[in-house]
Length: 309
Length: 286
Image (cartoon, rainbow over all chains, first blue to last red; front, side, top):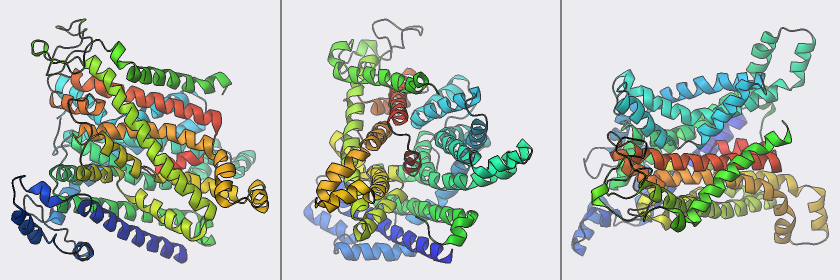
């Protein structure tokens, strides 16, 4: 176990470094922020002056090192427009993103896990088929369209809920449903197949054969072992969850990190883009790391047996 | 499940796909109006069943008086070709790397696998958004960005499968006969992976269409006046409080198309290869 955790930690560090390099290169090599910031009539001298001011005239490697050192100190530079610290902007928006992702997860998992378990237990039943059809439909759903349709129905036509913004619980309902619909189908399918795997194991047959009550078989023997794939699912879905949050925040004008990033991308506010991309990516790395460790801990074969793969 | 039941998704998905591709190819023949023709006199006409609607514009018109149905039919061209092209790019990249990593193993595998982990750790959508913002919007750039960011999922699956095959007797026999590695990979490993790759790619087309639409929705993809479902949805969003159809129908077109592709892909998977690997591999991306 310690060896495994150390390996994963090392891998995560490598990934973090890679993320910083890619993000940096993407913004500094592929495009020139100065040309986008200045009007077309700007003279070469103006361009040079701004480059110097932003530190963009130094060699690329030096720029990267400076970026990395600053980033490690939580300094991603200042927004080109508001002059505020990019990191402060991101932190300020973090609670909104957490609130949305948490609510979306609750909605998504609250529907998907019970449905997945029930569908597996009652395999082939009407409920099983209905939830499978629902999952196929949900997976094909462009959630930015779903969000707009929910706004048109519940905010414009029925006037029941607010169309955008954050504040009351009512503001949270539509975005949470949108994000939940994004998360639920895959979770439901994976929960169902995880539960089906467990239900066909020998120890379940043994438990049934020796006369254990079905309820106990399901909840004590099966669900406990199905917890491992479910935890894994939660972890690997985190990246998707943030992807969904980007879409949801944009549609509902939700004041979170993702909508901050999208806005910064559109205005080419590269310190903010850099900061939020790195920040969100690190969050994903951290959650994946924690998931792997949690799964290793839950599964004695990994906990005691050493390495995986 | 009976065989008929198993084939049902494939059939339904296939029909939807034929309709969508047919609309894209035959747009000029079947669209009732010119998708670019503006008519100030017939701005914002509602769909035919709403009060004020007319049979002349079944799904209504946009703020410039352009026929919505015609624009949706033409929009199929953009969405389907962008999805197919992006998938082709990412599939070729991903499969190549997966074959190399799985077959040669060792240090090459370490480098490629780490690159895959790195890419999968990125918020894919943000990466794509940032990349498009940097290199500029437009069809070509969008396809490049989606293609270049979409490969890891193929590499992951192909690598795992190749690792399994490389120890099999027929590969060992080929090696013993003195065939060189590229020939073994091309002639003996790849043919065994074709089904997996086809199924994976068909499902990826749907994902790419949704991503393309979202980029265009944000104004980072296809630029006006070219009709694309995502951009139309983006325009329609501005009018969602007053003219619901402008956002509803382009989005519905995206939904039905991706649903058809997913059904078709799922059906293909049941028909060709019931591997579980795919489900697990698709989970980490997006």
